[in-house]
Image (cartoon, rainbow, N blue to C red; front, side, top):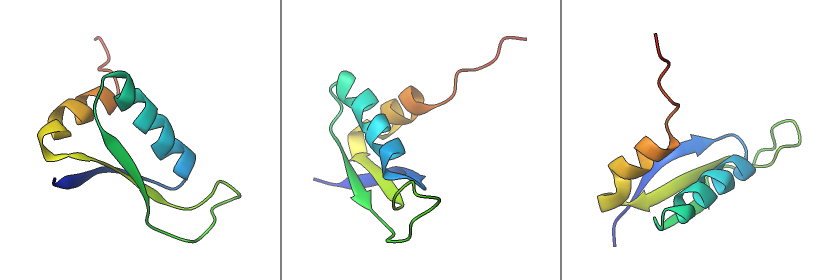
Length: 69
């Protein structure tokens, strides 16, 4: 199974929150540590990965809502 990084964060908790959002839509994902440095006590850098076939759906679910003009 191929996994693709769709988001990176400075704090692991952010990646875990995004993972929970995807889980609510039954999209498999995983969080991978990519750094050992600590940023202001928030934890280490992390990346959120999804399967290749779930890439676009995941990006849409995690994107910011568009503003109405």
